[in-house]
Length: 336
Image (cartoon, rainbow, N blue to C red; front, side):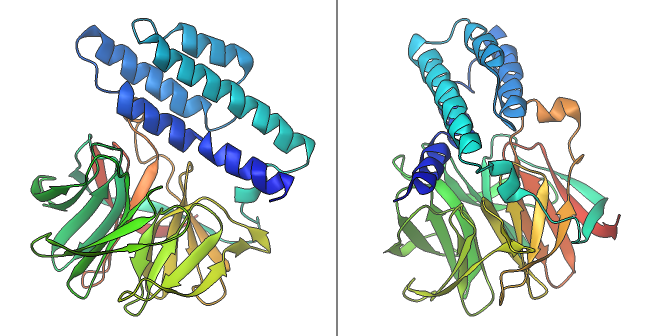
């Protein structure tokens, strides 16, 4: 493995994703006065880690965590320091994570209008979303909090739920031919359930991380946090082919939650409010959709990133939400 690949691997492990996931695992559920401070600190972390934090910002964060265990403060401090050092190494060798995700200005970018707003479980760390036959399926993450759910769109109430065993961190889901498929982040295993009863039918192994999942009626389509999309046989989970996603020849990495919409793969770019519309044959990005501004500044303080796209094919409706978001939105794509 070359230097660049090693740095990418280290940076991924020390990413905002991992740090905020750790935060939600160990810090995000205090009670009383600490609850408000935790929400504010978490929002501060989320906002600052959109870019590499400065040494002063890191010091403010760690010293501001009054009342939290020393082990938690040490973990955050080490992660921030290591992330800063790795970021500096990236700069030194001319590899910039922001450049990897930057869209070509020549590609069209669409905006949105909100058609309707629905309630969403603000404790759901959304990793996958699908609308099928009048029902909303949702997969959630975090160790000890991962689940698959059937959700009432109108009320946001969970009508059916199956929790994942604690060692696993749930990721993307999709429903195909009466089966619900669920990825895990780092366990290297996918679970297959009866989509009606949620009874476990079988499981499959795969290499690398699991992030997003959708299907084109023939293949499962999986993302792993890189610029690759894998096309898998739903019966055996064997890889049939893969495409690399590019925007005018530039690799587009951090492909996360996926949805197949009218012959295109829609994928949100982790850590941003952008969704790429991808040609499944070539991997070329044909357009972008900018979903910034869906939440208010106050709502964003206790929310994580955009992550969740669902398409109602019969009604031609698109829904989006995010991790720990209080709302789910039906949106219409509009020119900018």
